[in-house]
Amino acid sequence: MDDKDFRYKDILYRERPVSPARAHMTDENRAAQFMPFAALTGFGAMINETSRLTTKKHQLNEDELTLLNENLNKIAENISSKPEVKLVYFIPDERKSGGKYVSFQGSVRRLDEFKKELIFTDKSVVKIEDVLLIELL
Image (tube, rainbow, N blue to C red; front, top):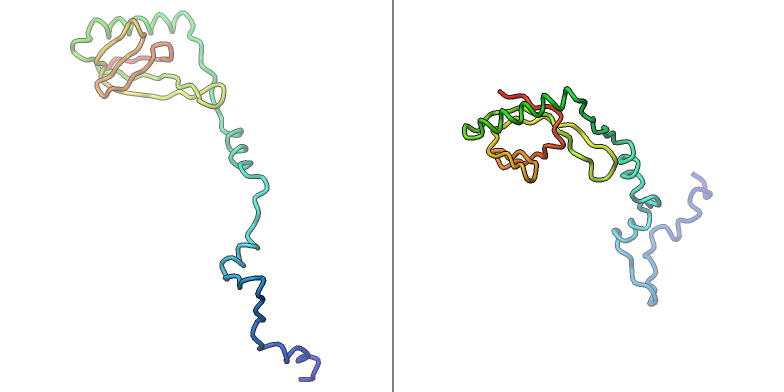
């Protein structure tokens, strides 16, 4: 090995000089200087929200409305026996236009004609205007 490789050997093992103006920085604080910077904070979440799909609410035709009303009348007639039903209803999205359709099965405890809601024994509430399909079990 020649002297070119060791041209800094006189300072290689020296102690770090202490400056009265600046305190010694901890390794943790020193590492924090080189952490990645997120210039576009929230951009990833915004892209995910935009790419999330929603469905438009289906407008019932006359035949579908007739079938829905017949099943609601059957539920009203048999409400004392807490009829078991399976239904598909629409849940509007809180952040975007549209929403999604969900299936639900349960026993109807009450049919609130004033609020136009189905109230189930597990305390779930479904608005009748959001119901797409009711099947009595």
